[in-house]
Length: 151
Image (cartoon, rainbow, N blue to C red; front, side, top):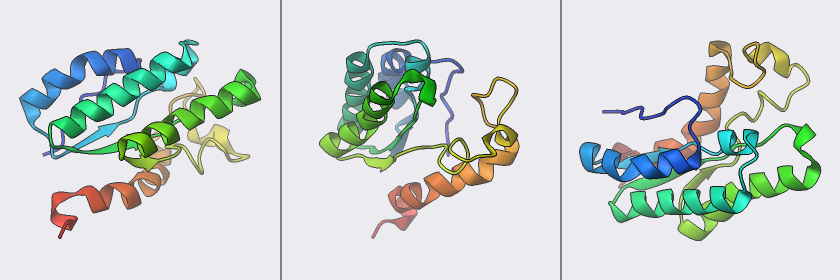
């Protein structure tokens, strides 16, 4: 069974506050954490985003779940240093907490010259036509975590 516990517009703080209850309720074998983009869009402190990601990964791992962390990046208008630091939060967290990592969910979609064709009018949320590319980004890292794929 797959449970989509996402809430549109949620930050890592919100995800962290809900995760323990969701884990108790659903007892997942795998937890996919794909949060942080809204933190950046709201200009929240990078350290807070990092701390929330670490707490979520640890909470999930302590429950016995395998964890997949899905990275995000911000548009270039946020500045080179902020963009680099934000993207590194995901790599740093996955490495330190021994979680699987997809470095950038929107690779091959947001970072292409024709990116506009893949997004809704808000230029933030992908269209359904982009979903196969997102799956192609996630599946190679998620598939080995599935219980049926493990020895």
